[in-house]
Every structure is written in structure tokens, then in C-alpha cells.
Amino acid sequence: MPVEIERKFLVAGDEWRAQVTRSELFRQGYLATTGSCSIRVRVGGTSAWISVKGRVTGMRRAEYEYEIPLAEANEILDTMCDEGRVEKYRHWVESGEREWEIDEFLGANAGLVVAELEIESERAEFARPAWLGREVTDDLRYYNASLAQLPWSSWAGGEDGEGA
Image 1 (cartoon, helix red, strand yellow):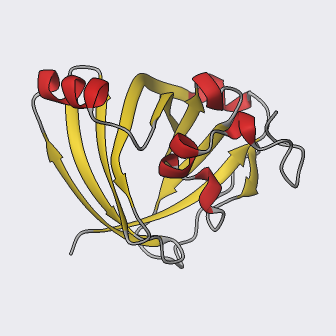
Image 2 (cartoon, helix red, strand yellow; image 1 turned 180 degrees about the horizontal axis):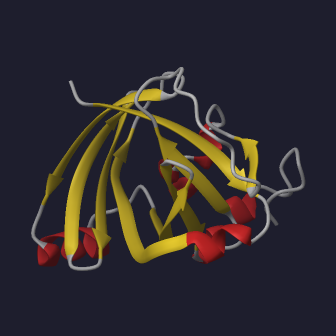
């Protein structure tokens, strides 16, 4: 079973922007979100994928991802994603020996910036860049499937004053 192990953090400040190696706009929507999985369609540039992601267990979850035709992905996004949509710029940032993915959200999630790091094991060591803020790996609200249904701007401040 293909497994993704990922850590998520809020981003503090804009220092990371000077380290961006590339950026791409992602548009994604959810066909289904249940307690055990989410089914997502994503478009980035001239490529598109459908993904099935299993329930988050700590930092680990099953992930199956398949490339699909761009035109079909756009049609699915525009007509079938009743579970919600997310738009964001993904920026890739080199820091030390790691490549971080920093998602800068748009629309109802504008203002939210989350850094993700895929790691080889749950105990993997990594240097924490100065721009790395609070860890939110265990806070399911920060997962894209959740943000599609309950956008960050609707959180009414959250426990740390985040959101609108």
C-alpha cells in the first residue's frame, strides 16, 4: 500500500519567499469525503490527477494517485465536486537537504499559508527553518479536504486568532 508520511506547519513571515525554486497554481475539488477517505481531483499547470487518500493516522496515510486527462479533470472540477474546492499556489522551497511544499491559499482560505514536508519515517529528523511556525499535523482543520468544506475564513478566529 502506498503511504504518505507528512508533517504540516503554519508559516511565520515571508522569509521563505527568497528560497522558492518554483511555483504552480493548483485547483482541486473533492468528489467524496468520508471518515475513512477522500477522493480528490487536482489540476496543476498542464497536468491533472485523481487521488484517493486514506484516513490520517498520526502523520501517516494511504495515498493512491493517478494521472488523468486535463480536459476531463477540469470537467469533473466544474460539474461534480459537491464536497468543495480549494485553490492555492504551491511553492517549492529548498531548505537544508529538504524540499518543503508551501501552500498559499486563495479564495475563502486566503491568508492561510501552510508548509508541508514529506518524510521517510515518522521519526525522521529535519532542520526547522526560521520561517517555520506552529505544527498543525494533528489538526485536521488544516487538511485540504477540511478546508474545502469549512474554509479558514469561517473559523471566527480559531484558538490562536487565525482565520477571519
